[in-house]
Image (cartoon, rainbow, N blue to C red; front, side, top):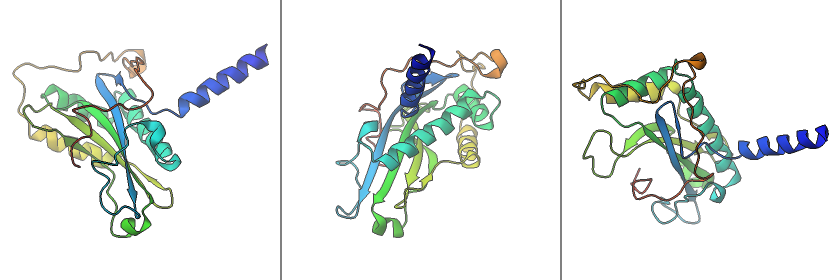
Length: 212
C-alpha cells in the first residue's frame, strides 16, 4: 500500500510540474494567462495576431518547457518577499502601477532563418491597450526559444531595472499603500494563493491581444 501511495504521489507531482503557474496570486502579485508566438519559416512574418496560441498544451514541447521554466523563475521571485524583484513590484503597486503578469513565449524552433535575422529578446515590459490609468494592462514576462530549443528568460537585473524606471515615472501616492494580502510572517514567504482556475491560459480581451 505504501508503495502504491508513493507511486500515486510521484505521478501527481510530475503532472503538476508540467503546468505553468497561472490564474493565481502570490504575495499580492497576480499571474494571469499565457500566449505562445510560434514563428515559422514556412509562414514568414509575425504570428501576431492570427497564429498566436493561448493554451499551454498547444505550444511545442520546447516552448512548453520554456514556459514552465519562466513561470518557475517568476514565482520564485514572488514567493521571496526579500527578493529585489518583489521589492520593486511592491513599490510599483504602492505608487499605483501595474501588478499583474502575463506569460509570453516566442518559439523559433520552426524558424531558423528568421532567427538568424534576430529573435525577440527575453524581457519584462508593460502592455496596456488604452493606457487610461497607470495600473492598466499587464506586465509581460517574455521568454524566447531558439531553433536549437534553448530557452532564454528575463534576467533579474533587467526586470529590476525596468520596474525601477516605471516607479520613477509615478508620483508618490497621497496615502501609503502596500500589497494588501502580504503577510511577512511564516519565514518571510508571505501569503501564497493556490486558487488556480485552470492549468492553461485563456483568451482575454485584456490579454496578449496587443502587438508586442
